[in-house]
Length: 174
Image (cartoon, rainbow, N blue to C red; front, side, top):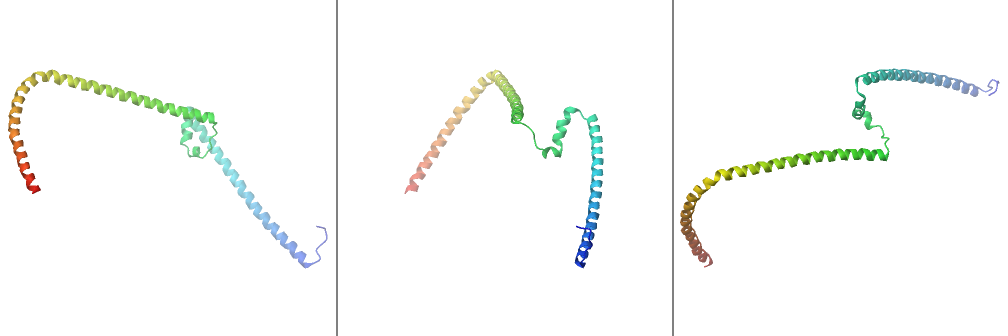
């Protein structure tokens, strides 16, 4: 604009409104700058505290445990993984080889258990056979006598049952 003073009252009001608006805008800008400065101070303070905590953790935690601590961290799940396909394959191969090793160990344990069970069964079979041989000869004499008497007694009973069933069958048909 020029250095001339406004000639119309509308322009005076317009400049007054503009001045008021710029004052309010400057006040809002100052408040925003104040909040930004406070936020920056808070962030700097938190960064300093974080550096102190990190230094303490580095002193107390073994570097080999860092990876495990990172994986337990909730931030671990949010961070993208920057692994190449070759690294992913290597990790998958390591995981699979660990599973195979575990399965091999389990198979070896099962084979050992089965071998122990077979040996125990073989020992159990050997003991009764050697101890039972004299008993079986005695038992055969007594059992054969019992069998003959029991089969003789059973034959007439079965004959009676079949005779009674054969008599009943024609009655049903009549």
